[in-house]
Length: 138
Image (cartoon, rainbow, N blue to C red; front, side):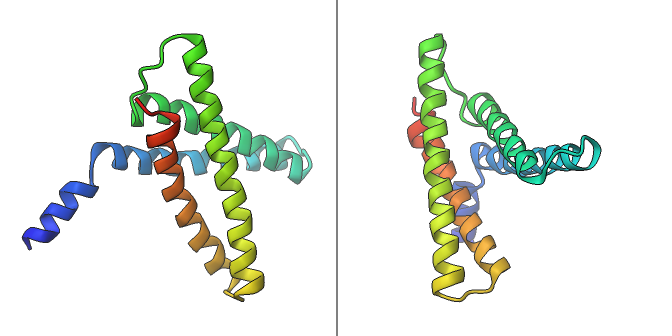
């Protein structure tokens, strides 16, 4: 029982809880923007998806920067450098997601949705560590 309490205390930090909350909100931003653009503004689906992804990544950057990781970057140069590292990290995990899904679905023949869920979990974990130790490193 003591081990479980220690593990909960170690892994249920404010940073991880906020990362989870804003991760869910980022996903909702992505889906909501896509839905509005396709169903109300009647934009083409791929264009809508691209716009939704860009806005979701921007939302993730700003919420992660201030609320989750408490960035101390203050000058424009520091903020741009930090933003560049964040985008680089997200580009890397996008490649991981594309390759990982391909390997799981096409090579290992894991069911489509299972492959998507498994690689998404890996990407979420990678994004957390990239943000914490690379993009928003103090």
